[in-house]
Length: 133
Image 1: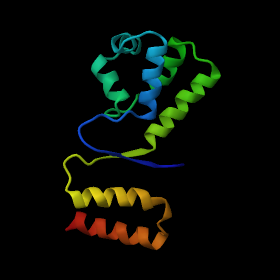
Image 2: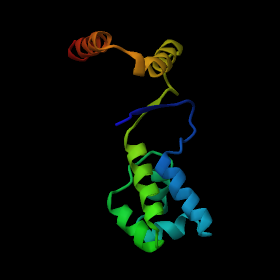
Image 3: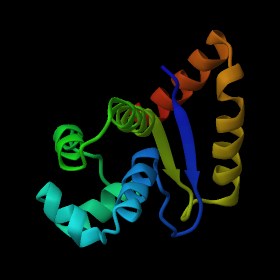
Image 4: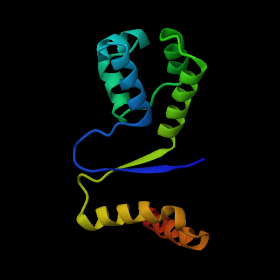
């Protein structure tokens, strides 16, 4: 399972894979946010929050979307892949961090896949000590 670290800078929203999927689906069907929200039985604000990565998509939406929009098997698989991709992402909001913490987060994200087990353990121990202290 791949884990993605997404770094958010500034106050702008960050579209997730599921957000892109839902927005594209709405546009292709000529719908506004309110239309899809009504079909899903939620508020426009909640759907917007899901699209913008501020809320997680409820699992029940997979069946609702598949039935409501008469998805093909390929479309259902694309939806499931978008859900998995979104759920495997970790987002850091760097808007109110110091420049040094921002640089640390970006550096860590770039080097994460190449960290060996010993280095990972050392970083984890440092973070645990700070948490306990």
